[in-house]
Structures are given as C-alpha cells and as structure tokens.
Amino acid sequence: MTEAIITPASHSHTHHDHGHAGHDHGALGHSHSAGVKDERRLALAGMILTVFLGAEIVGGLLSGSLALLADAGHMVSDVLSLLMGWAALRIGRRPSSTRHSYGFRRLEVLAAFVNGSSLLIVSIWIVIEAVRRLLNPQPIGGGLMLAVAAVGLVANAISLLILNEGRESSLNMRGVWLHVLSDLFGFAAAILAALIIMITGWVIADPLLSLIFAAMILRGAVSVVKGSAHVLLQGTPADIDLDAIASDLVHTIPGVQRVHHLHAWSLTGNDRLITLHAVTGAGEETGEDRDRILDAIQHRLSDRFGISHATVQMETGLRSDDHPCRLSPLPGQVHHADHDHNHD
Image (tube, rainbow, N blue to C red):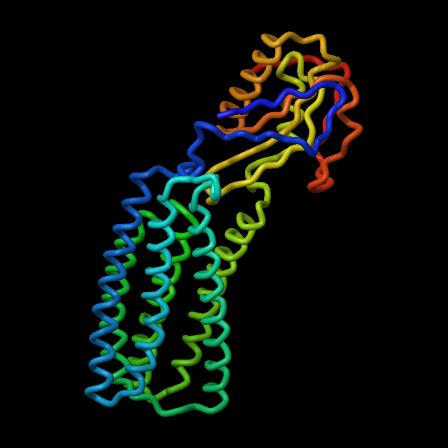
C-alpha cells in the first residue's frame, strides 16, 4: 500500500504527515494462520521438553545424581526459549494502536536476538569447560550419561520435528529451532562420548566432542544474532538495493525526474517497507498527473521489487534538493535530467 504526501516547491523535509489510516502494520509480512500454527508448534514442543525436564529433576533428586541435575539446569534454558518465542508470537498478534502503530510483531525479532545471544553464551561456556576438562580429565559415569542422553535425544528429536516446518517462517522460529537443534546435537555427542568412555575408558572423548558441538552452535547462533540485530537496527533488507530502486523509478516512470531520501527496513525480517521522495518537476503537473505517477510508483515497487508498503512524498519544484535528509546521509539520490523511460 502506498501513501502520498504532496509538497510545493518551497518546503521543509522535517514536516511529514505520515498518516497510516487503514493499515494494519502488525500483519505485515506474516499471515495470521502461519502465526497461529507456529504458536501451536512452540506450545507442543515446550510441553514435551517440560515433561522431560520434570522427569530429569525427579530422577536427579531420587538418585542423587549431580549429572542429571546439571543437565536439567541446561534444559531450563531450552524451555524458557520456547516460552519466550511463544509469548512473542502471542503478543505480536495484538492489533496496532496509536501508541504502537506498527503493532508488536517486532517482539519476534527481539526474542530471536535474545535466543541467539544465549546460544552464544552457552557455546562459549562449553568451550571453556571443554578446555578445562582436556587439561584436567575427570572421571565420568558412562552408563548414567548414556541413559540421560538417550532420553534427551528422543525428546529433542520429537520437538525438532514439530518445529521443523516453521523454522523458516521468522527469525523467532529459527532461533527457537536452533536452540532445540543444539541440544539434539549435544545429546548425540554425549551418547557417542558415553559409548567411547564405556568401551575404551577414554574420558577426553567427552570434551573433544563438546568442542565440535560448540563450534556448530556458534555458527548458527552468530547467524541468528546478526540477522535479528540488523532488523532491530532497521537496516536495509539484504535483497533491497536503494540505488537500483531510485534509478529504476527514474528511468521507467514518466514524470519522475529524481528520487531521493530512500529508507527501507523490515519489521520482522520477512516484510519490506520503504519511504522515498519523488520529484516530479517544476509544478506543472495536475492532481491527476500526480495520482498517475503515484499509482505507477506503487505498482512498480510491488511488481518489480516486492515492496507492498510504501510511503511516498511527492515533491514539485527544483528546490527539493536544498534540504538534505536529517536522519542520515544516505546515498541513493539519483538525478537524470534527460533520460529515456524504458518500461518492462
């Protein structure tokens, strides 16, 4: 959806009346049904891991096993990550308001950032602990370790299958999925290490496999943190080239002489929003001409670049360049006095 703001030759860029009547920003880029399905996936996976967590705590208390209780502490972080992801989706479905005009969908990205950051911390802790155990090997009960790891592997495998279909739907779901996947790899490594220890007595197999496991977690966690941080900082989506958009609009839409002050961002990582100024000449255009140009910009942004939500400020006159953008010195100010309009 595109909105227009018409300004005369003499104007100030600091005055923008961006009315968003009729928009539901909370629904951008993510369907209601998809969000509900993701909620159900997170809830079901969370219940499975919670049951396993409860059984692990009871088993640890009854047996006096510190290993079981320590692993239960790690499982708490997984359950909390699922709960946080579920809450972000739930709250994100609330409608937008005058105070939160974009709704609450960005909570998903914040949850992904927190989940990714926690995985970074976990992976660093694993590396430190693994190095410590390599330098000072400790006796490990392979039988108990194998039993706990086997049950944990099954619980996490079921949860991962539940979450697998929705892992690409949002950064939030990917962060939670990665959390569960990291545990799955961890339990698999623990099973392998337990078998090696039981057969050979080689206790350093545990820290060695833990280092490999930590490297796998670290790679995925960095990806989630970078992606979510980019969205939170309102960075330009990776598939959007502002210079290319400005040049394309100038060359394909008759009446557009220059496009500047482009800003593109995403609310959730899946949607695309843009604001821009389009200069149309020295004021000779009629209202119908400007409506035609605005409509052409709207369709071009949607059809060519996949951007369905745009706020366009249409400017008349040659003095528009006298007022640089006060938000940031962004590039993307394309000016072609004489150009051909090629339509595709």
